Length: 174
Image (tube, rainbow, N blue to C red; front, side, top):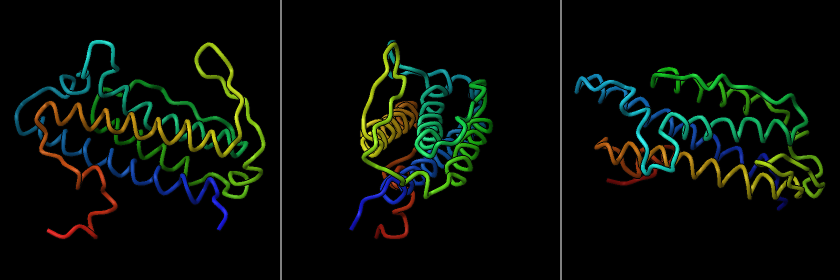
């Protein structure tokens, strides 16, 4: 069986986007029920040198949308990065999902061993296309989704593995 970018990466992206939608919705509900300003949650960080929740969600959506678009040779989407509510962050997740779903699968899977050069911080990095998907896009997706989840858990949101592994819910026996 040949491992393709679309078969190995797209399901994970969809699952983590589902996770983000679920935990952001639950956070919005909790803020409304407890009269806590959403900005309190959105600006919360796990540590002083970490990004706040809103920025974690931005990275969790932008990196897959832009990275997969780059691999497919499509125009790189831009995001305003100005979301100030859970509703706006959920809209961002939905927009990123739509971008990813519209990517041409043939173009995405073409030439997995071909090298690609991408800007990463102050330098350019050259690696194979499949490696870029597996070693840059997926780890960043998981890291920033996990950071979002952990910030909300730290703030007392009643979420657990069932919310994080959203697509596994039908298979989990209680």
